[in-house]
Length: 142
Image (cartoon, rainbow, N blue to C red):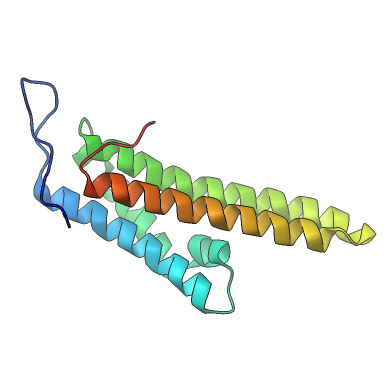
């Protein structure tokens, strides 16, 4: 991992506690573990991401330390992680509702499969992009 952590330069950004950077890496690792569980088991990636213990612990960790990262570039990572979790849950609910209605005309299976595949790709992308930005010491856009 890269050891460069942005620090305050000419008063532009507050100094970031290295333990909070490590904490944020752990949260990305927990989300990644949920993705890997989904890829290597009978569960879907989205199902493992939303209902898996590692991701639930990660979101709780986000909320528990959210005030500690306020005003730093890590705040954008926390927001990114929380939004990824909750938007994935929302999309899963929307896909489920639409597919349930359409199952009666036999295209519900296709909408379920396509929707889950799309959300899976989106979740993997968001976790990978966020973790790479954290490694590089960059904030996520908000």
